[in-house]
Amino acid sequence: SIPILLTLLSIIGLRATGIVELNDMLVRSLAFIPLWCVFLMRIHRETVAKSAMLPRLLCSPRLLFMGGISFPIFIVHGPIGQLMYKKAVAMKVWGKVLANPQPNGVDWFFGVYWLAVILAAVCLDKFFLQSNKVKEFSKNTGAAICRAIG
Image (cartoon, rainbow, N blue to C red; front, side, top):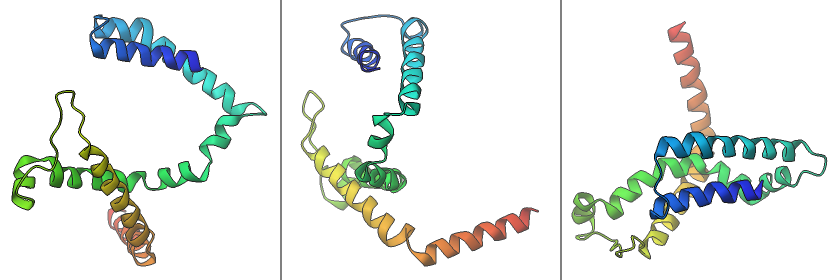
């Protein structure tokens, strides 16, 4: 499955850099979709095998932790990005836009942005989403909505 994955990534990379210029529908139908199906079948076979390494990898504590904070990351990345990158917002809050992208589009501040996002997501998860009061409120609200709509 690694060669298939590398082929898929190569197709994306070659098209993104303009080295290979092919019609998008042609690439999808003749290359990407068939290769993706083969990749998924091989991954499925790997997960059901007796000596499956992939399920052990996916159940590692670090990946489980990152999966646990994926929803908080989704919630906080937008507002934090607005504070740091959106010119109208950043000028009001900081007096300047915090990032200065290079011609190649890379900026060191992107790492600071993601660090802030991860820290905010961990705090949101630990102090809000894992709170018993929030869980109880959510449970009661869901039950009340279900009763109200029948």
